[in-house]
Image (cartoon, rainbow, N blue to C red; front, side, top):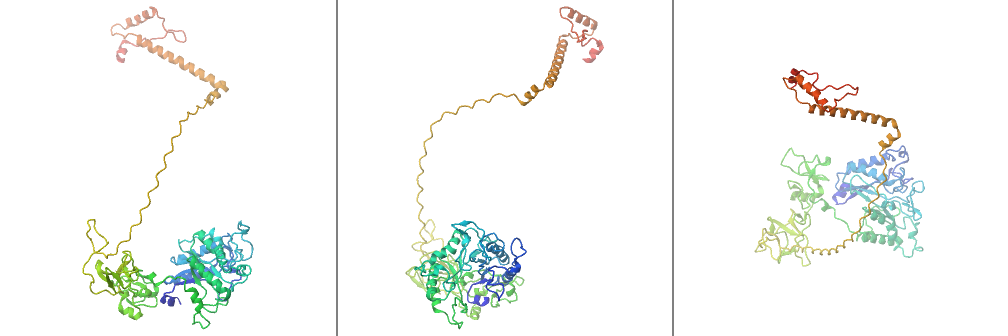
Length: 580
């Protein structure tokens, strides 16, 4: 099925709809079975069956270009959102499970459905704060998988940014007529009241959270009130530019029917008309220009220039080089992706019954279809032109004005291998007229086609003048100096005053130091006043010393009352010369 969808250019989203083929709906509305709830693993139910299944699917289908993501679990109606209860908090479980899937296939999108009423499988109120008289995250009248009310306060933070997609499921009266907003007696304006319901249940919470939103399921039997409901839902999708999946293709879905009738071949024409106004994105151009990659296991056995249902193997001039492949959908798409350009060979295109489209390979609009025929400088071209080329390559416009002429330099490109080229030049002169790239002196540095460049953006308005500076404030008198604090003696002084013994010791030491200093100074003065002794009259010197003391000065006494000796009393004359 996946390979056939790839051949038809269809994208595939894998949805884990049930854990066991014979059991649906799950009697508890949770993503794990009863025997997986205890013991907890990392604070969460183990859910090993669901985790193992996703690892297997991701490993098998990640290499398929058209498989784009994983819808983790279908309609966990018995769960809560952001309640913090390990056994029911679907937001926490989806975060852990999504990271496991991304570990196997980092490019996939992770689709996360809403919950049911938000109370939990055992119908107890979630333990959240009360808001306007009701518990946050509780929605009494939400369909299974529709309730995203808690998203505006609890988001799923995946390990790979930009991969989370929130995906509510929405249905009409035939699916559950008990919903009061379907009652035409209570709401005569039905279905005009439905957009307000949808905004409350999932649109506004997603907007407040800045989240990506894709309606994962909507549909029903297109009759009676369900027809009215379906038309309102389609308009809601158009008004808010929302993507969606319609349920279902198969006709044996009991309460909704399908896009096919009971013969599984004839389409339901009215449902097709319902969906026709909804835009869709072409998928095949998404692969244009994707470079060749190392052949995966499914393409490793191919010989050069061979293909299977999924891959085409490129050729190589180097025998030891690793084999390179492209997706088979890239073959004959009008763009060379193989290094040897073998993916656009005419023989391969005939084998695949494909006609390569004429698309641009480079330029300001690469991988876009050429707009043919076109008018350029008054001439009509039915194929790519060699006139006024860039680098000698044929070119074409990718968009035309109302007159069918090439009009904007931003809308051109060099033609790819699937394009026809005008054999001869149509114009007698080269160069640009009325616009085009020129040097400062007006000459043309290279030949360009002559569409005038887009006008420059308008100049921004000048900034408003700055407001005048406010006048300086009048001078103020300096504040008075604060009064000096009252004097308090240092702590050391206070301690000495409180204890007299240290004071006495200090005074005694000070007195001794004073007496010693005084004696030293006296002796020094006496030595300075003594005459130097002479070699021939040492005794005379000593006699003169005594006479000097008798001549008016009292000889100094020691503390014991005996005369002190002078510095030279016991030194001989020879010793004095020895001191010199």
